[in-house]
Length: 194
Image 1 (cartoon, rainbow, N blue to C red):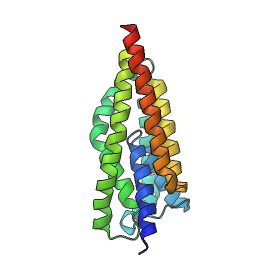
Image 2 (image 1 turned 135 degrees about the horizontal axis):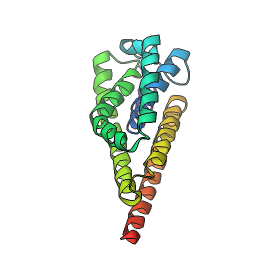
Image 3 (image 1 turned 45 degrees about the horizontal axis):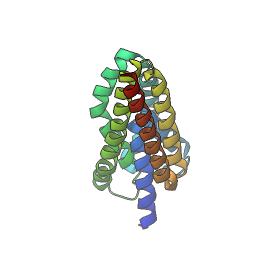
Image 4 (image 1 turned 30 degrees about the vertical axis):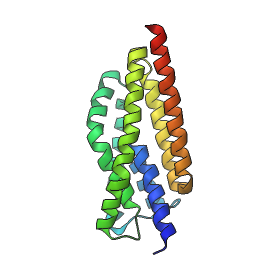
């Protein structure tokens, strides 16, 4: 096994896992579709081949649509974020583990947990902090707009991971810089309104 295949799989898994921190099901849907159509750098570990199935694709599509719509509704979005704190690390671990094709399933699952769970929790933490800042400064009026931004960033980050895994560290750095800048603006906006 060549070391670069493991590195590419780790970067692909990292990008997909971080994306789940913003939108739980969209990265898995894109992973499933890419695996089914044999796109990009996506190759699934044999134990995760079920992600290519019609049933998996249909379930992930429905789950993605429900999450995208529900996250735009102010009272439901807070409920979803509470549940997502537990679901996103699992979805991230699944996405990351699935792409370690050259490893046995147990090693792939362990690496999926090591890479996926922290990446998703970190991104989910950034999302939550941004939402709290938005809720405090705009009384939640900007939350649907932030939700659209989350969806777009999750989509772009997932696509980047699938087609250009070597660019994932740069993409993650840009996302963190964008989030830090937004949080800084929300904080200064709140300070001036008090």
